[in-house]
Image (cartoon, rainbow, N blue to C red):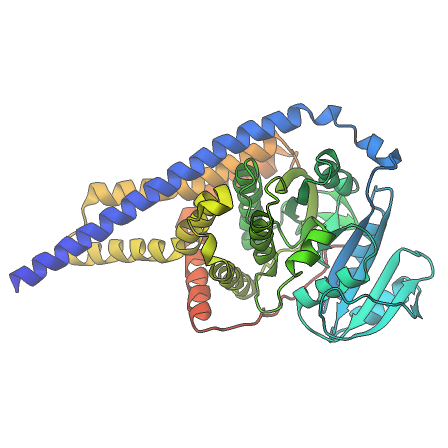
Length: 473
């Protein structure tokens, strides 16, 4: 019996040390990303005033863009979003709203708000989609098109929009989003400067909850009162200002938010468009584009993130809806890694295969499982009286560094660069909330992502409902 107990103690000790060194590695990696991002942000915003965005408005070389807005039950916010797009400061664009079989009044709201009439329009089926029932064009805004199609999901709606679009670049934009006026000028500039080598450019996404938005324009930026929404403000800062800048620096970006990204249409169509059989269609497409360009000897083609152009979107304020969203994100992540597992540690795919893919596997996908073991180890140690206190203290310290302090650092990066929250009280509130993350919000996220892992293993599909209040008056 003593040998069995000794073996169990050895296993317990080994698990503790594994978790400790895992958290140490992840903390070090995040700190490195923080440094890279800070240097890159300083470089970018040191040149910001000299960026000739005004020239893009007048240049004949500025490529036109098709803006695709998939809409399913988006009655509450669709009009405000379209109004914000119509006011976009860009020389040539079209807006294609795709009503994906909505069960509410999304279709009727669009028809009434923008005086839309039914037209006969030939649609080239570059990508297979559910049937498009009708096509409408606004009598007031000739570049505003509405597709009414049978329900097929977001990926199917985007593919239908691609089929109808007439321009060489398209932007995927969530129906509850509000763009800043110069967002397209800023997100398109790297594509134009690269002479087409940049095949995808993604911008920042920020939380609109609490902001005053009228007729599709952000008039006043405020923090939300809801605690879950405030934590998502911090999360988005950390994800965009740290993670994506760091990975984008060396063409290792595996995620461009489905809420705001511009793509080379020809490359996307050649790669097969959006997949219908995954809930993480935005990440899966980016991973597949990396794979497609490498396998077709197109190494110069890059995918980048531009921190300044901002898209404002509504975040869930209800824990049950947020829970469904996070579990769905976990399923989408796992599915994307499964579908492209041949890239894992494969030098053929460059730094994406050697660094990005392993990072998303070991840190993003396996992270919730290892964190859960860490919490369990602490509970077991306390219950049995075998907790090594210096170890527990070190693990707690690293967890705070990994979560709360890096989140607070992201808030400081925000103030240093974009300065979207000008009030000192807002920044103070964000920093204080960030310091609490380790003690309540991170464990909740770990649990929700574990649920997503279990759902993925059970091959559970579906998006779950996201109730919108609308971000604009």
